[in-house]
Amino acid sequence: MAEEQVDSRPGVGFGVSRAPSPDSRPPATPAEITAMADTVPDITADSHDSALWWVAALHDDAAAMRQLASSAKLLIRRSVARAAHLPPDVVDLLARDEDCVVGLFLAESCDDATADVLVDVWAWWSGSFSFPGRPRNHPNFPRDDLLRFADDPRPRVRLLALDDPASDDDLVERFSRDPDSEVRGRAAEDPRLSPDSAVRLTQETAHEVYEPARRNPALPPAHLVSLLLDERSARDAAQNPALPVAVMHRMIALAGKGRGPNAHA
Image (cartoon, rainbow, N blue to C red; front, top):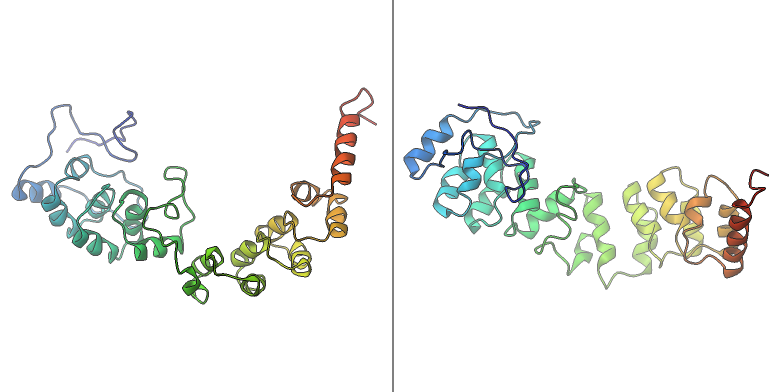
């Protein structure tokens, strides 16, 4: 079998391998699909192989997707999961796949991925440059009744509760003391945070907590100014929307002097 290469041509699709030759054609019958599948090598879970070109060519063939989704070959199942649309039974089968990357590919590529799949992926995947915003911006990602996640054992799922319109100050305060730093970081950026908790979070050692806390408008002005006077925190504090106007004017004046002929002083 000819060596496959990633095709970077516009319109071909990210991560799809190139056909061995210009006259290559995908299999057309179940028997041909089986024969082609038999030539696919086994891969390990940590493999980064591209999606198979001939599976991608069959993405619009529901019968072929059903046949291939049950394949024992991991590379084939991952290639199926890259389809933009899949029948519900195929989505359900792939959603239960033991390989987590199959679920990831569903969340990134398939508009038919279910909310459960998307939340499961969100629990451990923060996104990629190739598919920005996924799975959070997927059309099926849950956007209502997010308070049900407030006690979820998975930290990244738990923090979704703060996006529910019915969430309140009490939940923000509770999450500001969550054992997981990412959850505390989500609370640290919430403007409903109490001033005392905002100050407390600026003193944490985890950057994902203290950086958003320094930018939180709930910070008392006196503490915010003290952060500005410390070179370790000044950059974050300068981005705080609650910065007093007088302080901003002073910062602008100092910056202007810094560009003058005596800037070295």
